[in-house]
Image 1 (spheres, rainbow, N blue to C red):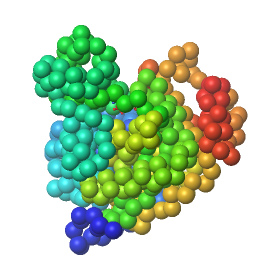
Image 2: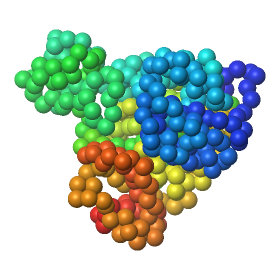
Image 3: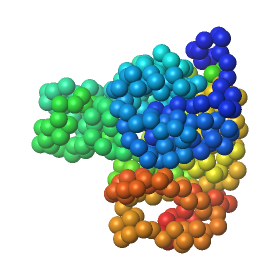
Image 4: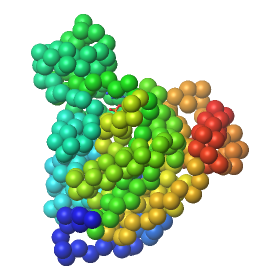
Length: 384
Ligand code: AMP
């Protein structure tokens, strides 16, 4: 077990300590709920107020991420800083690190907040990744398309999530327009993977190098946005083993302290390819909140505070369905109908403005099998 790279004078942050969260969305909210349950205090920092995290934190600070003095002030008031949003500028993580330990470190953020850096890191360390090439000009793009064929997908290297900044290219005549759509941003061309399914593994790594994972979760996306996740994934044991081995190695190579999600494509021939990394709790792990002894949020807290990691045991097969803003198109959804399913748990993030594609909440169902849980969670969402 490779110990994480922290000072030898390391002292755990015990209950009663203050945790600072950079970012203020639903991941921070569920982290704050787990932290407050264990007697910690939570401060959140983002450019907004009345945020999903701020509504349950002790202190909500509103300032731009590039206000480095505000970041330093925020970090001075807490014992440990973590983040729930990886697009925090690297300078903010560095400024925070002047005043408090930042876990995972700013270098993990730096690698994973840019697809090109992330994929280059993975390839250079021998991990299986979707074939890709950096695109700086139309010539690069044309050469990439000749190498990968059609379809291929052009993605902006930075600030991409939920399919944002992505253009699928199905013919040579679309190349110029796809590049123009990316504007002046750095881009990366990826070969299109005709996957059998999408999988994710959430791994957690403690300050002492200890590792925990929740097995493999199977994910279905709709319009590039996660729709339904189920656990455990129905896979041959050898694929599960490989996915977990890869995940542990990624956390070690990146020297992560905290939770990190590895998103995979499983090809028809049984090959695992990493699509991307998220250096934090992840949407596909929300079902751990209700279905596991230790949720991804509590584990993030344990890891960044230097506590022993908790058991990741899945208590019952489970499924999670996202609730997007589209559900509000005819007014407030019918919460009573969803609550009439006794094995379904409702989570809402306190967002005031439902918009199409915006993640407003989720449902988790537990049942005798993952397929039954998936059917149940879909039925409960239908009832809304
Ligand atoms: P991303 O933002 O890269 O995670 O992409 C969001 C979703 O788009 C993925 O979960 C896939 O469903 C799809 N996608 C992205 N890249 C590819 C690819 N190279 N091949 C096939 N599907 C992709």
